[in-house]
Length: 308
Ligand code: PSU
Ligand code: MN
Image 1 (cartoon, rainbow, N blue to C red):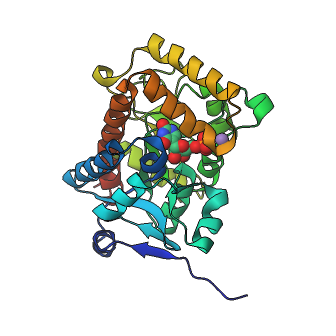
Image 2: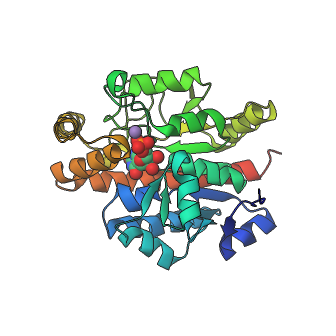
Image 3: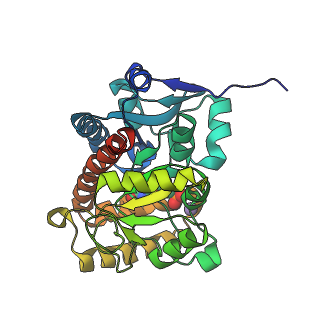
């Protein structure tokens, strides 16, 4: 069989940062293609990149374009992903297909972790991770993001997991697979639209330098696998808990009634929640991603500059 090399292609900005040993922050693209509507998706992607640069790190948005894993995208490519109606949502399973066919692929948390690890980028910022869905005992719907966290050594800065998921079971699953869940700013794990999931995170570490030291210790031991860093949405931008709970219940009922399954479930729920909140959930979503960008950039900087 012909030997394929990894089809990684770096943007000029990311290649330059690698050559100089500058801190780099990986970003996913499913959040652009399937997580938010146009044009807010592209606008947010650009603003998130700018926030990371302002903190002294270099953003690397990851997608699959023309049979290549692209690390760092141009403005035009962000626009392409944001507008495309046929960008494929790409998780671990889908990576070979989208590369082999040359289709346009937007990477999930799982696929972005794989690509970030290949590109030797240890810090990745997103909105929320996938998890164990409610009713998973009959549907078996457990996001591939969790298996990826178990095996791929990338820190994922997120605002916790959505309450469309079973957050308790998601945390149990992570524990079983040895994935540490670090909370910052509070003791509890975050719940995406709201700061508090009601479940304690494993460890609270607020200081980026100490978070970086945690990662160094884990990986120096040969303990491969990811780390979840939960950064709660700022209170002023959070959704009221009762409102989001009621809307989530309704969106879940609609998904069940319409027989939505597989990889369509998460995008369907996100879109319904946005519609049912009259767009207010989108404002919260945008705010929390930006807040995560700051935390991720600071962590990437701390990881790059060894403690003195
Ligand atoms: N949660 C969000 N926004 C998103 C996603 C999750 O708040 O855009 C996306 C991420 O790309 C995540 C994926 O990796 O959905 C999980 O999909 P699934 O549940 O099908 O594994
Ligand atoms: Mn799923």
